Image 1 (cartoon, helix red, strand yellow):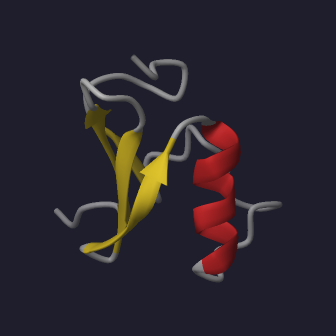
Image 2 (tube, rainbow, N blue to C red):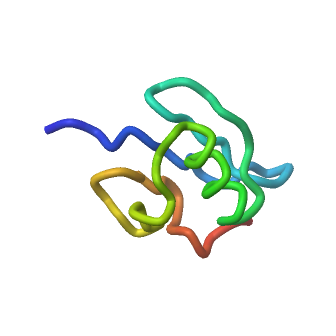
Length: 68
């Protein structure tokens, strides 16, 4: 079974969640707006991909509503 290309890692004690795309770190997200921006920059159509699309995004340590 393959892993989704986007991983949003567990919340960090100092805030935000690390995001990796294709195994490469792309930055720290502090909200879903940041995650969507990382997807846009990576060329993933944010009008097609939703935050709960498990084939594209793996949320570790909580879903898109968990930030701390």
